Image (cartoon, rainbow, N blue to C red; front, side):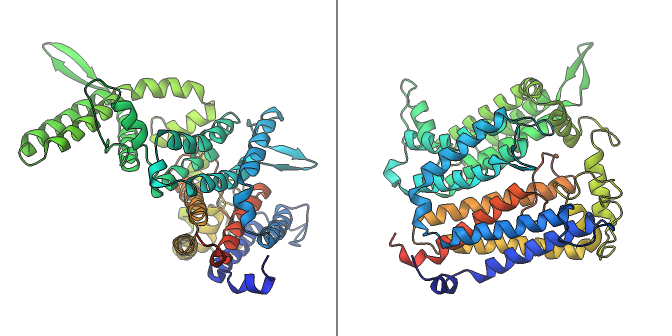
Length: 466
């Protein structure tokens, strides 16, 4: 183990400084929004700001312990750490439900959420597994193994159910894609089982992420249109056209025009690719309504309501959509320069216009107090952190360090983007905390430990040969 002074010498001070500044800003916001005149001291443990201060100090202490451990420990013990969190995810399913979810393990008057720490363990094991692969080993078995590392905790988290954390775990797919671990081997193996078909590459698997985004947009468009039924007269009969049929006809028309116009300009192989993608798009568009109806039956009522409200399939501004509407009103009321620190009225705990304003909607009081100018500073700070993490990732000698750094970057980006989207109406309310800001011990500890592991790996990067 290196001496402490040599470790601090190689510490990424810009990232560490941004982390501390973020913690201070988050604590100040919670103190403002949850202020109690009867207990004004920030050290008052009976108030949320007092408990948050304790969680911050305890998380920094855990981070210090993490920083003093040799970085090779995280690679060598990635599997036991991963299995331990899976065990906790199983145990938590038998715990009493809190707010309708079996997501907490009670310890005295406190509770710990294992799903938060599962992000760290999954990042470590995914980094360990992918870093040990060569280009020739990226086949069906390795892709399925890497996917299983993600799917097992995702399945357990879905059983709680915790839709927010489940969505965050999909960020690891981008890390796999970044490291060249695509779904091409799986699709290639499937396609080559067809008699008379032999491909060296499928193109579809190599472009999995862009195609996934395109299908996601297609799915959302289909859902939005499916709430509208257009009736057209046809041979004296009224022919109803749902959103799914409209999307199918639209895709066929676009493809027909593209085929006729570019038939002589595009190679036959590329036209075959267009056909494959179109076929998959038609299948998705045609079956989406049925799948959503059945899928909604599997969701809890409040989760189904949030998705329908977000997509505009129904309106309920003073009922199920109250949180989102109040959050947008609070953010908008801040104006350009805000109302001033401690002067948030719409989003304060005392007014209770924005429920959970110190947890999932912590962005609301911050935006109301500091306005657009303060929000811009917050955005710059978050993107600076993401930029520093990417810089750290790219300067690593060891693949394990690089992959873990990209896992951290994607987790933070998902949390930041979805939480802000929830607060301004761009995303459904699925319960995702804002990193280093939202009130809560489990999320604070997990984010701090995650960051300090990254800082330690980077501080010892020169000791690693590969």
